[in-house]
Image (cartoon, rainbow, N blue to C red):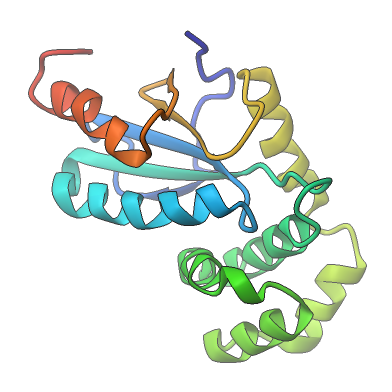
Length: 178
C-alpha cells in the first residue's frame, strides 16, 4: 500500500482539525468526472463523521486529458489567497460541466474576487509552484490518477466510489485501527 510522502501542513487546504482521528487527503482534478462524483461523497462523509474527519484537498490536474484542470486549479488558488478556497472548490465542482474562462469570471464576481487580479493570475505563473508542489507530492506518493485518497497517510483505492472510505474511517473513529 502506498503512503503519503508529503505530510499535511498549514500550506494545504484543510477543512476541520488536523487533530481529528481521521485525516482524509484527496488528490483531485476539477475537470475529472470521477472527482466530480467523489465531491458529493466527500460532503456526505463530512456530514456523517463531523469533527472526527479532517479533509484536505490537493491539486492533481491531469492536463493532458482535462484542458481546464490547471486553469480551474489556478482559479481555486487565486480564491485561496483571498480566503475563499472552499467556496471556489465547491463552485468549480458544482459547475464542472461549464469549466472555462467565462465561468471563472462569473465565479470571481459571485465570490467577490477581483476579476482583473484573476486575469493577472492566469497570465502569470503566480500559482504554478503551489500546484506543481501538490502534483509532485502526489507523484511521490504513488498517485497516478484522480481522485486518489489517503486516510491517515495510507492510500485507499476506490473500487465502488467514496463509499469505500466509510469502513476504514469508521474503524479509525471507533479506535479499531490506527
